[in-house]
Length: 85
Image (cartoon, rainbow, N blue to C red; front, side, top):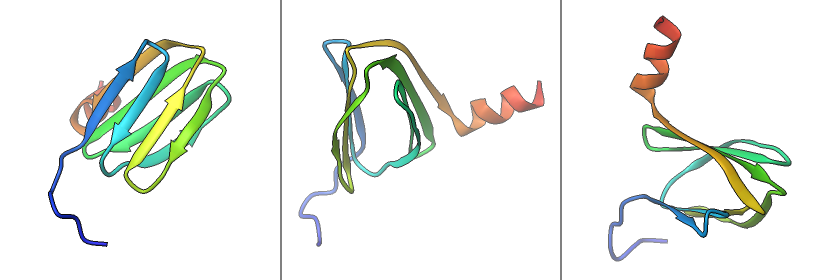
């Protein structure tokens, strides 16, 4: 399907319990209390309690926790710098 409007990616945290990703992404790893996603050059790791996957489609993902306890966003350059240190 062809899109009428080209949109960028966005990451939204709602009520400190829900993580929504709009745009192209790749689900790297999923566990009972965490999700690791790649979007563009960014890697997003969300950790919380009682993870529920609300939506998982081609360009939309919604992960809901009872509460998000930690969140980490890194770029590919930061990841390489950490490995070189």
